[in-house]
Length: 152
Ligand SMILES: [Zn+2]
Image 1 (cartoon, rainbow, N blue to C red):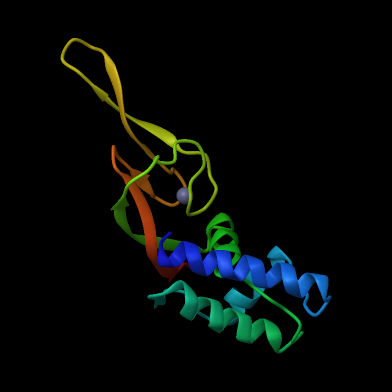
Image 2 (cartoon, rainbow, N blue to C red; image 1 turned 135 degrees about the vertical axis):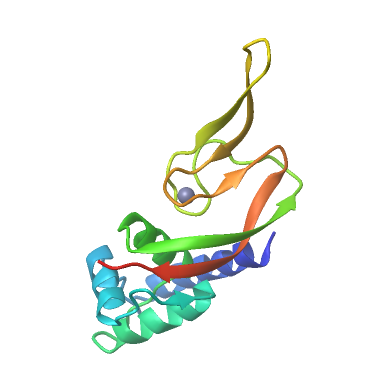
């Protein structure tokens, strides 16, 4: 398990526990996007998911201190809303590469096809049309994200 994955796993466990105890609230997608926009981060680069999460969660908690936000949810919301671009730092790993859903943003992956000289098509990898994640024969596991917030 990578560091990013284990952080996400811990966050998930923490969320479940907190939900049982009803000690937290989940901000809606729109609320998260609004907080990001209101921080005037447009054009800025934030070099870790955790830094961005703390910035945005801090803003959200000024309205409701029960708000919780995982890094994974934040990343997916911002990418889907089209207000963040990510640069993905990945490392190669053993195991099956993803071939259906993007591990970064959940979008459907598309095949990277190579055409041989005799016209046969060979799938050499998969890529995400939304965030740019790709993986070839070796599985590429995201370990860090660098975010650039775009104009909204
Ligand atoms: Zn993606």
